[in-house]
Length: 363
View 1 (cartoon, rainbow, N blue to C red):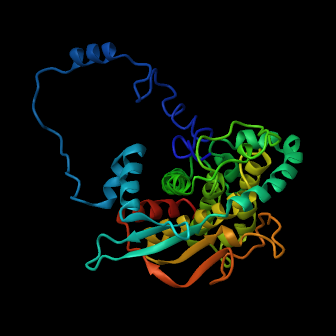
View 2: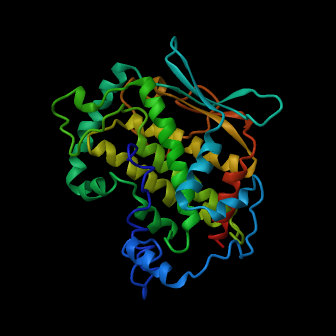
View 3: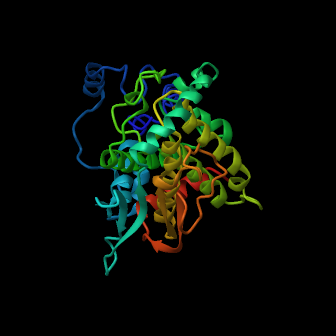
């Protein structure tokens, strides 16, 4: 999922979005069928003498976020993404083998780098012990093969069944999901490079993955990170929507959203390309990155989150499996941690515009 998640993420939902817009027209406004020669002939026949600028055209305001409404999806995405990641930086500490994602609000008068996520990977011995769980999960391959293959690419249709996403009603929501995918891929790939955790197949010839092993590090899991980021983002959107009710629809959907994210993550373990501890870290990282995007869009604050893979094991040292029942809100002493205090991340006006447009789709 992670290597191609951010490109074409809504294919399968949006493949027919533009194909029907020009019914009754021979080629559509995209020009896919109408040739340049036909357009040249048409203009030559009707244009007449050139009269200069005769239309009333208003100039868009300078640096106005609402100008995003004028642009195509691609340029809009790139503008929002550049603003979203502005100020993100990575720092490593080789002694404890720790990597930290930090953020500095570059628009603030006093610029300070603050940690958002701290990760410490499991030891090599812990990964090897996790291999027993990977081998056991292989028994589920026949049952889950269809899901696993369909979830190799962005599984937007799976999310649509839980949240009611539709291509015609939720265009800005899908763009917001695309934005969080881009953020997640950027961050997860850097962490994968830093920790360089090898895949299960490199430890045992008996794992024999049922799909091709991705060409990047195992920890944290990209599928898990992306899935939990979508789950948290959708819940936040539905909770913030006008008329969301009490309790809001996002909270009412929380369990199903989380279960779907967990199943997508675990399916990668079943496939033989990840360890359960990869999913656990992805859950933490995806949650933190979605919270960061929402905070940038709404001007709110976030809690620093952390995951220490060395603590992800049973009391007797046995490998620990991934479970949604594991709390992510411990302040210390556990694999998952969440700071008591919060960090301000400023307000990203372009991301805020897209967020507000997406909210309108959930009335």
